[in-house]
Image (tube, rainbow, N blue to C red):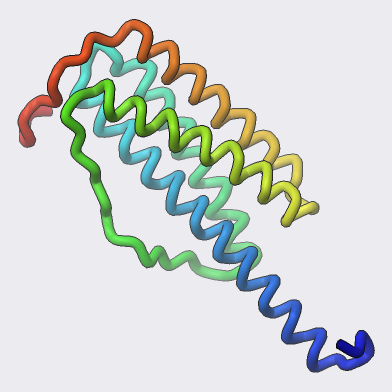
Length: 155
């Protein structure tokens, strides 16, 4: 490619921008899913309400921060994913799933820190918080009896 070919350079940067937008959109969707999951779990399992509700609040803050960034860079956020609530046979399975999701989120934020150098501090802070969530979930797993999820409709 000729670096002086403005049209070719513009096309490449459009692809880079689209790729970055997809990454940020995916993380925003994941944070919304996490917030909703922790809110539901905190209502269903009263013994763990406090820690799960706090995690839901932290995820809500992540959503707010990412939404502000997304809208400042790309305009209105229009999620394409429908509500995909998972059901689990036990709280243990739900927490294990959230544990894995927090690990994935931490790794994704580290990648975003590389792609968005101007926002590196934000993404590194989010990665650190997701690792903290992972540790909290690990601690919950240690004290958790494996009991079945209550029937739908009971909250």
